[in-house]
Amino acid sequence: MTEHKPSKNLWALSSLASTMGDGGADFAADDQESFRRQEFVFASLNLLLIGALLALQAISRLVRGRPSASVIIVLAVGLTVQAAHLVWLRRKNATISRGTRRFLTFWSLGFNSTLALVLTSLTIRGDTAYYALMLLPILEASFRLGLGATIAVIGLADFISFMGAYGLKFGEYIEAGAMSVIYSVMGVLVWLLVNNLRTREAKFVHNLEELDRTRQQLLSEEKLAAIGRLSRAIAHEIRNPVAMISSSLATATRPGQDETEREEMFSIAAKEAVRLERLTTDFLVYARPRPVQIARANLADTLNYVATVARAHAANEGVTIDVAVDSNLEGEFDATQMHQALLNLVLNAIDACHRGDLVKLNAQMNGNGTIRIDVADPAGPISAEIVARIFEPLFTTKQGGNGLGLAIARNIARAHGSDITLRINETRRVCFSIEIPAHSPSQSLR
Image (cartoon, rainbow, N blue to C red):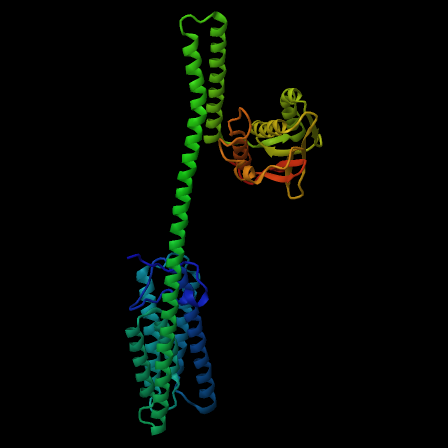
């Protein structure tokens, strides 16, 4: 059977209830903060109660000459001890062990019970109200102990009530009996309420744990499915060039082939080998990206370099590249890796365009301490089905592409604490954006 452990982050009443067991004392090791808060509340209330009794008895002694000085002394000692206990709780930051929690619980019960017994003994056959000191032990037992222990504390409180009425008029016994009934109802009712809260909380925590296990299982299954898809895609991508290489070499080495056809077959094999090498290199870059080397760099230099590298391909496709960036704009990024990420975005934009189109490469301050770099083209919109998979490794709609360009670019962006977003996807306008820090981050990114 699954063991239900109390949650660490609980709302106020439930956090107090969480240290109370269903059938006996419970001092769970994973509920230290709840116990500390609860003990501090009980100690503070007890300090106020003892202080109020001391003040009232001091006033009574001044006005009526009662009670005796010994009562005042006992109350003063009790107040001092309780204040020291509160100070200790306030200052103690170390872990409160299970044994210490058990000791503190029974010490609190014993301290108030002893104080009430001593004071009642000193004022027997006279006016006494020290049975009030048993209020907090009953509540503490209801919160922390089982029903049997709670009833035992209630029985002790009832005994002290009747002890205070000893030797007095019959009406005092009726009053003590009424107080006993109040103690019993209060203690049992609080125990039932707290126990009910604890049961509900255990069910709630159990449900949360079940949900978390289900979520982890779904994530694990999704990861396995993603690995399966990736493996199939890699196998497909590798199989094609390997098959072409094998077929070309077999044809080239077949007896009776003329030199021209043999050279053509060797050329095909060489091209497919280059394609296979590029695929392997890109996949290794995606699967094992190197750490970013953050340094201050000029955005104009970066964007112009990317545009220069991409212009030959753009010219072949009849596409123009326009760069718009402040020549003094600087940011904190790895220039080499950012070149690669932006070049992938620009080449994708060029391939999506028609002849005569314009690809825009811009950078500007974003107003929140970051610089936004945009790569825009007029080849939109991208369909929803493609958008859902656009950053998926080895997914491509481009002839001859391997589907790793955007995945690598996203890894680079995330290594900089950012991401690539499809910021605009409209008719005749598509824009991918990357944000980078304008100033040095507080910690080095890896």
